Image 1 (cartoon, one colour):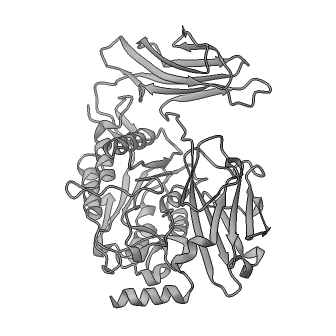
Image 2 (image 1 turned 45 degrees about the vertical axis):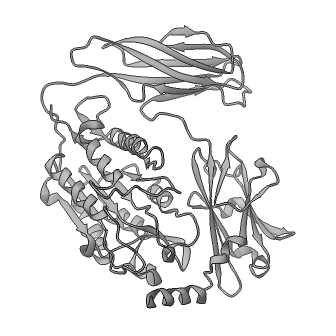
Image 3 (image 1 turned 90 degrees about the vertical axis):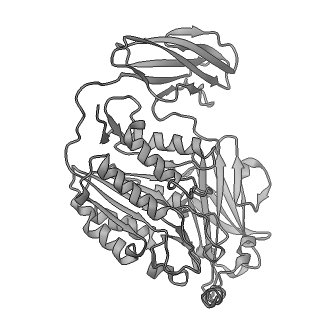
Length: 498
């Protein structure tokens, strides 16, 4: 109780008050004149090209124009943002057309704003903008060619079945496959072909279901749509043959740093997580007993051994053991949070994290990025995070927790590093009381062989991440949706015994 009183006093002293929500509102001009005060905003149509954040009086009157900073999807937007006066305070207008890579993307987008007044007091808020999800299946290859002057984007093809590559058994010469999906377009369709066979298509939305006979000589099944302007879209569904015979081997050593924190020294404000440390131990055990990792190459930190100092030491001294041509896995299960005293900063909680002193006692995402950049030598490093757990009131900033969004963007320009997070921003991960957390369970099951989609004897990064994502989404009935970034997607991670 004393700690909570101390923290509340500290929060008030630095001006981090619960009423900050009324300081900022968001407007999306493409959606009309409405000004939103919601944390999550739906934008179901075409991707908006501009955003306006209203900074309201009386706070706006005490904030200089240059002390308003904005971010879109974790990246500063100062160079596309203009701040001006308005009837109710100030507005920060982001023109997303000014820079090619500064734009909203399909799915969940994050928008942040922080204003600092003349007395140094900071006000912060973030919004989630949910746009139409990308329906592309990452197992498949998509092609598009637009006719001159066509601004509609051309036909859009959604494949509903199959969900994974088509695989012929080792003794199968042919196989019958159902290809099912939908084509939609603004302009009427001129033609639709599935595996070379024409399907009747004279409308702007066409459902199709075709039986296709594939053979061992086929490398893919092509679904192609052309509209009346000549714009074309195609999807290639891979076809492969299952391998049989000798077990596959992966050359080179593989290393794993596995961290899971269920127990926290500051129990009054960071309550126990049911499965985080269990998940870490189970994941490490699966790597050594079933996935071919040597025990001496798997370093585990749980609970009291996972202090900030020990985590930093492991990142600096253990991860460099994986050489450029060797695999490194980093797994972290625990809390991810904004600093209650400076919500623009995001951290991973260590065993000894204190909410009144987060910068000194937790691992900042910025420090994680810098440490990984300087210490990780591996050109195939996979970072797995299960950190978006429900936070107690003392640890929240009454904002969306953006930890997963920031983690996904840890290494945007590094082809040797990939990241997977257990859930999408705005969701909490599922902690089961028995048998471990859902995300860790599916990581283990996929590594055992379920992820070998084309049955060639190895699990690649792409196969592993896609299987885990699909399995978690299904098991949670859509309430938990892992996200990931892929660089060297086809590199093998695990070998399957045959």
